[in-house]
Image 1 (tube, helix red, strand yellow):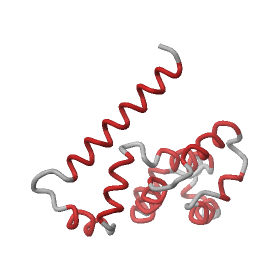
Image 2 (cartoon, one colour; image 1 turned 180 degrees about the vertical axis):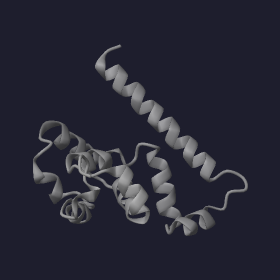
Image 3 (cartoon, one colour; image 1 turned 120 degrees about the horizontal axis):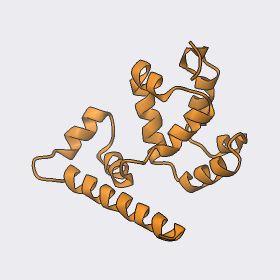
Image 4 (cartoon, one colour; image 1 turned 90 degrees about the vertical axis):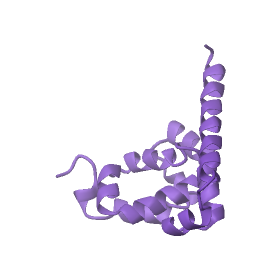
Length: 136
């Protein structure tokens, strides 16, 4: 399988998963407004997030790793903040640029200019070391 064929197959799987998420969300017996309210989102935000599919916040994982921040510890210790970071990342319009910049220049701070999570990530990076990977 050529590289572009593999990429297309991965894209197609992601799109199918996103469509399935939207169908499930809008399925019979689901109250989108109630679900959105329970999550602290507008119904339109919930639909946007569901449309991005399960990998919608993958770029956040890359950034956390690059900043030596422990995503699992953040989920455990700051679940609301982590959920907000994921929500913002999922709806970001600079995903391709983020991945491209990460792959080409992972240590370049240029992402801070377009990342809507930059302020929060900077604060986390400058927080006490217990949230950072490789520290005890």
